[in-house]
Amino acid sequence: NISGALCISQAWPGMARTIYNDHKRFLETYLTPYPGFFFTGDGVYRTSEGYYQLTGRLDDIINISGHRLGTAEVEDVVNHHVAVAESAVIGYPHEIKGEGKMPVFLSLKCLSWGYRTATLAAELRELISKKIAKYAAPEYVQVT
Image (cartoon, rainbow, N blue to C red; front, side, top):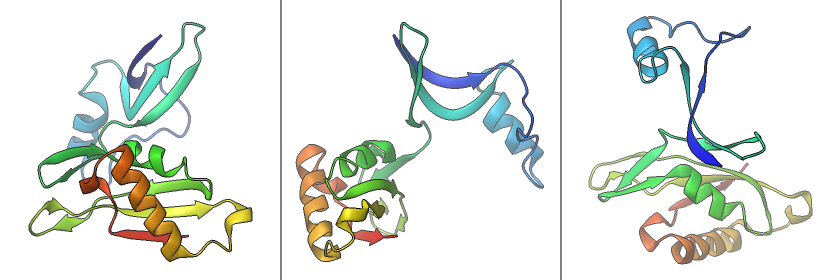
């Protein structure tokens, strides 16, 4: 039972080989962090039985008023809501706070299509405030 960065030791068909017009960035991002391995950017948990579970992006950190917050952390809380099937959280530039409170994009479970967006947004803000902190509550909730 161990957690860490997901790195791959051998090439595979269809893997990235460069970043258009920025090969140096490709090398620095994917090959330099762990020499001899391709760094995927994902965190992973491996059980004692050898099963792997992706735990989220390691580089998806949002800085809100000096608080560092992982997007996967917020997505995990949002995905526990009864109406939510899947979510995505992103940061956006904010002239005072550095980054703004994240918008949350949702896909709802089919039985929840009639759920009112305003009600859902309020419930999610309350849930995130309780489970993480008030500063993490999103300004925007967008059902996709």
